[in-house]
Image (cartoon, rainbow, N blue to C red; front, side, top):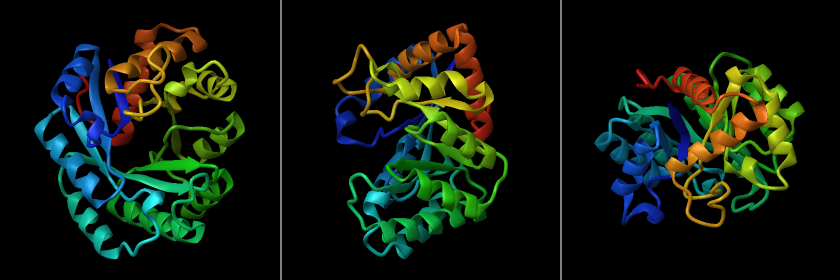
Length: 258
């Protein structure tokens, strides 16, 4: 039992073999996949994919890369999309001060707006945080603590930062980078945080784990990430898969995971 809590199945990397990709995933024991939007178009496509596949769910939102343009009409349409039962989260939202495709002030404004919308809609958030740890943490503190508020996707901070996020009510999601040779900090987090706050993901088509590094990532490969985390935690991979899947089900309301 495994759940890939973050993939981008709408991307052109999968346009020629999406069905085969999903067959491989389900054949590898992946019981649920969350495909995540980054703007209005991709959010709509994510919902369309989820509507066709009972084991796939969708998240809708606007990525910080797309924060420069006015977004009120798009946000209103995204809010309408959340009425579909396949939508289980608001995201991918957050801050990216590495690429800076949008001005930081625009990113902060859009992130805050979407956090407020997700709260009003009672949806967990999927948070993108790249080179903006302090700023993301401050905004989440501003929103206040709670239970099952969301997840810090593709976590890249240290264990102290992870503890700060968890204290507010967020889960920590570990991608395939945990298998990389020099990913010491990620391995420390993956092995050190409480199991009940841990999720796993692919971020497919990005960040393929070893031995697939450098190739297209896909949901089936979340098993490789789970295997490495189980090794680090010195536990049975099946137990790790079961526990992280239950965490995902609890956060996103995924129903029966069998």
